[in-house]
Length: 369
Ligand code: UDP
Image (cartoon, rainbow, N blue to C red; front, side, top):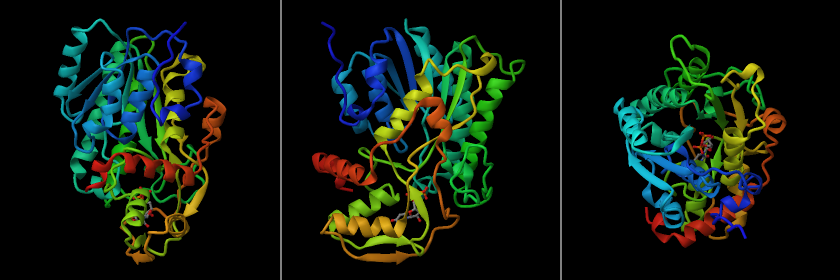
């Protein structure tokens, strides 16, 4: 009888796991930069469950070793954690030395190493910018040399404050290059350009057969392991509701977001990184970016009112100034993800809030911030 893999609470919700588990992944290595972060650590758990060996690279700017507790407890022999900063050139030497000593075959390099919360990345703008730019340059080159897939975690922020709604991948965006958010927005836009060049400039950037570039444009995502004090709207409202504090709504609250629960997002990332059916036309390494997220928009005021109704301890709504360059609307157009990946988010945000809350209650230490 084949032993069933141990699966984390979030990964239990992934429809793809059952389909990919039978594939033999022995001795295959996935390298996850930012694997100690919110999204990165769930992606690590999913890859381990699928049978990959996983090396996490993290600078611990916003990552947290506690996010890897589940992986460490259940897959200690398949997990290695390296402290390194993808914005620094020596990251390549560190990785090449580790790879030379290993018998594993590099199958995937995933770049999820960037602070992603607007108030947090504005505290370290240069590091945010360079993690995205240098990190993409170094890690895509590594993937090219090893002839494996390079997955870039890009963002809906490449659309800026969009004039087109919902946003299809073909929309070029409306981004302020010299504003509060530009370190992140332009960092991700340049990262996409670098990934594009890695796939299109073989004379300057030679690659081995098997090299593939995949870019996920990730829309607002939330769930367990997001830091309660990270400053984003879901964590703020949930934390405020639990503490009996007023619920902060910025501006008039008429701006919209669409909120994706983390298991849906990880499902999309796995599909994009691993689906063998993703045949690329003419065998080029390039596949144009794909939106991932949830496509049900809600105004921030409606969200706060719903949180107030769901959680009786919540205080009333208070309005605070709208931060600079805050997009008015944001919602992914998902038809490309649906057609190419069979992707369809399934978790309503109300369920996601309940699951996030349950996680916080089971991890008392994450709430003492
Ligand atoms: N927001 C809010 N109250 C908060 C935090 C954020 O009303 O306590 C708003 C913010 O102005 C933005 C939206 O919620 O319009 C989403 O903000 P978040 O920081 O979560 O992510 P963004 O989509 O802006 O990157």
